[in-house]
Image (cartoon, rainbow, N blue to C red; front, side):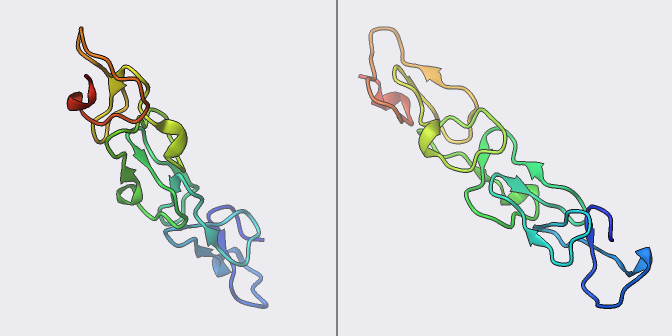
Length: 126
């Protein structure tokens, strides 16, 4: 069988040299004959195992093939972990706001308050 990060798509292949590099955006486990989609929250470079999208980004769909395929976290969300696949659980907390592409919330100023999750700018602190 072909090793991890490669695949064999030919019948009657018998040598290691018959294995091909896994294409970008795909994952190839050892012994695979068909590359599978790169998982959500990750990107897959050519002939590598999946890499987690970094903090401040997320990826809600399959087949990421480069770091550029990880989307910047929008305002109102706190992307402070790697490999985020969906935004809903990552809304900015109460008493704070989160601008675009951040991994830490900003507290509302003294004397102001913000009592809902998902604020994206200081103007939402009243």
